[in-house]
View 1 (cartoon, one colour):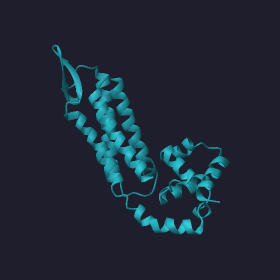
View 2 (tube, rainbow, N blue to C red):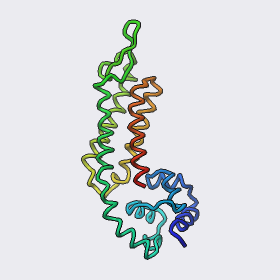
View 3 (cartoon, rainbow, N blue to C red):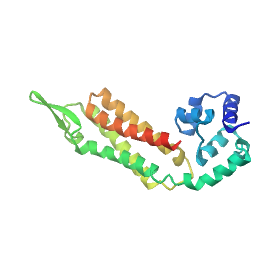
View 4 (tube, helix red, strand yellow):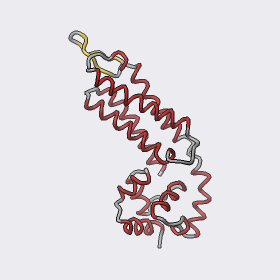
Length: 201
């Protein structure tokens, strides 16, 4: 049985959807679909996570030849040096919201752009929410940069999901708050992250 067929069979035995598997592995549903259709193969970290999820060994997932290929490609896959620093820097760039004129504020009959620190035309609660989500993104970015070499514990598996989640929450908040420039800025950051993740799978 081919590797992609094994993946499908194991998923169905667990009664899981591709979306559920993707959520457990912190990858996109498109990545799981590629693996199961034979159009792509997971990296070594994802293979370990798949084996743990389905309660099997990596040997049981891969044939001898596939296992040999995975072992040979492992050093190259470990070379993902840019992903964590890139995610960290993108999240840290949310600090620009505090200092650059991403927010619209009425002044007389005009609307002018102001930074978050100068925004007074919205309620204190909304301004605090804006500041909180921007600060949370920066905090996740700093943690990602500081712990990029950490391989154990919950952080390595959750850091990208956390980064995407805070980015999505912040973008949604600025859309709801009718702050199109701030929302567009964060949406671009989110887009870059998705592109990087999809290229990696």
